[in-house]
Length: 199
Image (tube, rainbow, N blue to C red; front, side, top):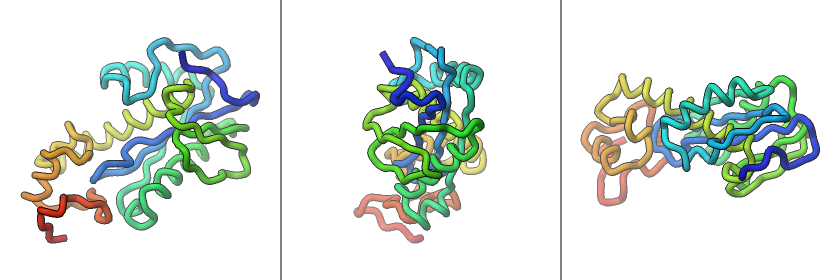
């Protein structure tokens, strides 16, 4: 059973990101402040949920939260500041959009940088422990998937609609065959060593 709160603060937000390990597209983060009486038996870490359940939960989370926000950090910036910094930046951007301003932040994972002097706690596997982080993981994943589905139309040969930019064998074969796009993260190892790639 996921818990509602970590701290004793009324306005506690959970934050999480999606797309860190992808070869293409943004890293996307969400931040959510849930209502005090929020409960949902279905809600869990987005990786444990089917796509259907994630999209079923999204409007419920949006309706039943005090505040929620989503932010993308795109591949150019990922290449410029690295994926860890880009993930934290995406979380900061999503928290910055919340109204009211949270009094406490709980973060999925073990890496974060202070944001506006708001106290925070990093929680490993937090998306399987706290409802607000699980809610943020669902929003981050579904909004990122929407974006990948959109750019799939532009470059259907990479099948981002299916792999969402993750390093599947099919995605790598397409990179080998068609080269890289403006959406690929140039600082990532796009192909294993045995493939030669002209960037």
